[in-house]
Amino acid sequence: MNKEFFSKKNILAFLTALISILIGLVYLALVFILDFRGPMNPPPSEALISAVVF
Image (cartoon, rainbow, N blue to C red):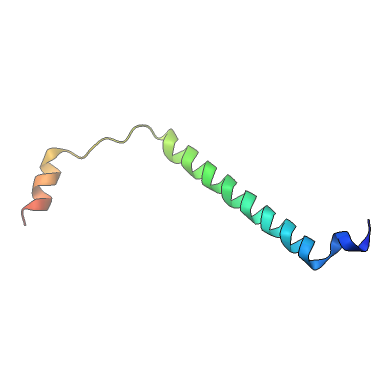
């Protein structure tokens, strides 16, 4: 390849793109894992009453 392809700007751009893609994949994996646990149920009403009254 030519020398312009391996300039510092291009290396920085590729590195930034790689980090961005990795962050996106980690986020998607985290959302998939948390969503796989099932629907979220609200807490029982007894828990809400004890939190309001000290």
